Length: 237
Image (cartoon, rainbow, N blue to C red; front, top):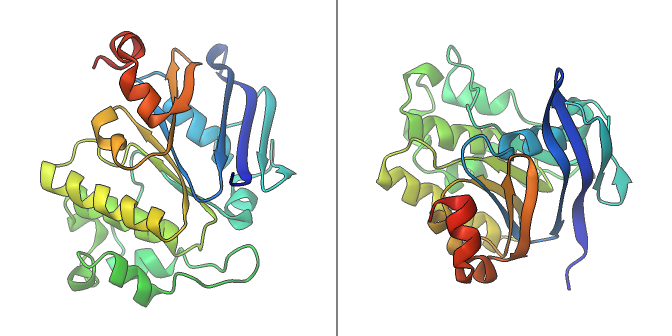
């Protein structure tokens, strides 16, 4: 059994006076992919932002590689080895693809440089011919590839992917799926937030389903796929 690398234990998150997460929990073994599934507005992005330190938790605990990172500033969490690919991509539209990648480069938490820019281009061949194009001139799928590449440039230990297939053409969804599969085969640990169960079936090892800020299912992806009640109640499948 792989060592658990990331644990979220009973976190509560608020936006002002409105509570978004209610004692939400998950855990991710090293080298595995966890699918965080739920309908739009269920709390998936909030969970990812809380792990990455983008929004604060009211209480509960986030542990990464044995260290409590609850309340740690987002830039320190990134330096510790958590790469975050946000739902809205947030590339720099007035910088080239190349500059978007270079600006994100940092060594890993132990000084490793597993993802030099040449390897990122090898992993994302779609970007190589576009390296001099402005980020704002890219298609949605190309921007999504760029955000993943930008995160890899930071040599993360865990990669948080928030809705990477949302709004993309089927061919780009297929390319994103292939990319995740390749990253997983290289031993990367991934948390994949998605509405689309079918997209996750061939990619994830385990799944957590969240609904209205509450985690309502924990189990293997196969167990989730076999549970028609959970799928119909919380995933509209």
